[in-house]
Image 1 (cartoon, helix red, strand yellow):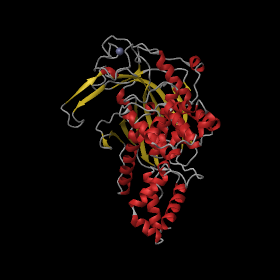
Image 2 (image 1 turned 120 degrees about the horizontal axis):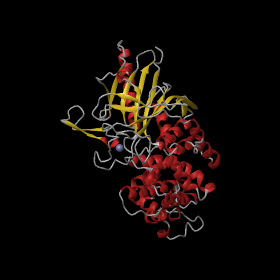
Image 3 (image 1 turned 90 degrees about the vertical axis):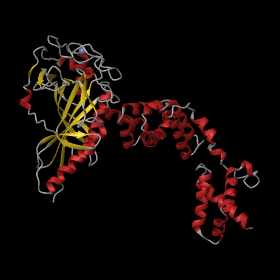
Image 4 (image 1 turned 180 degrees about the vertical axis):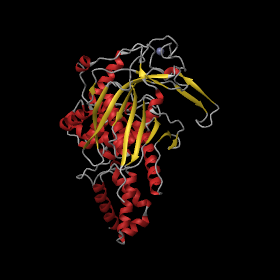
Length: 494
Ligand SMILES: [Zn+2]
């Protein structure tokens, strides 16, 4: 049987990071405030209230359209999408329907088969966010739900892609690239809870497609898609067919579930919003100048700092990370860039992910000092990681943060503290010669292994080296350890 081809298209809703809502002056900074405190007659949809369009939100949406290579239409229009739901008290959502703001663009991602791959963008439209239901108890078994209209009227853009993605991994890459692009444009803050929500269309080639709604995290998208692919493939393998339907993603359980509501487009009775005039923004869009975007910055990192393609991709894949990198190498680009490239893209990101920490928590000056210590050979790579871990743990636990040089001294991992002066090696005082001291200790602690080495057992020698590495906390050069251990063993035999 031929490989079943997976087809994925995404509809991404992003909150635009404006100060006020889309059609009224209410503040969008609602997350830490009490429910229903950021509301007015307009966003509550009280009778007679008139919407006034927030100019900034349209400018933000046009920036996105331009960055995603879309054409902004000469005329676009707001429509009412009619449906009843408790989080939408005016019983219609103001959105765009047959005349969206922009159409026909693309975003480049790193495709599964390597190289750049274009994911086509069908359209971008502007709409208002509905309110939010807070279920008391679980969604299935809650006793009652509360409604909070603070979110009602927050400006959203919906970005609809063509079904050009062929795996959950490509879908994740698309989302990551989109998030980075929006952040570079300063129109979106991915750190804000619920600022991005995704609906995914997914099918196996030749079968019906399923829409999975309501995915509210980046990781959730990949998980929901993986679940759906497995479900659909197993139906097909058993000779059953996949129904065309809408399913909901249940984040906590990692599964999708058929939803009973089956609205069709015509159920929404779309019609033009009578209280808002059509938008004519052509001359305005021409004047919008875009900042440096992720692809351009990636190429610059390769050219200017000599980053590898993979590292440049990682570093520029997040605005905060790219800024951090440039801050760190800023003082000494030639000297630090090569180190910073690997230490940030590989080591630091790994340590941050492990601790679920953001790059914002890392002190750039401290990190620069750490790289300088590594560059000057004051500490080994292995001690560098140890020092970095202490730095991050101090920050994570809200402890006073030491600079790397202070940590190096406290841990006593300065390379010199284990280094041996070859000329004075034999005469040096044992206390001043920590490697020899460590060797002496190890030999005393493991007489049986020493005996085995004499009998010619290679494993025993390696065991002793292992013990020594532990004792010197990996700060000594392994080749040097080897040489000195052999030397000490020979001395003992005499
Ligand atoms: Zn309002």
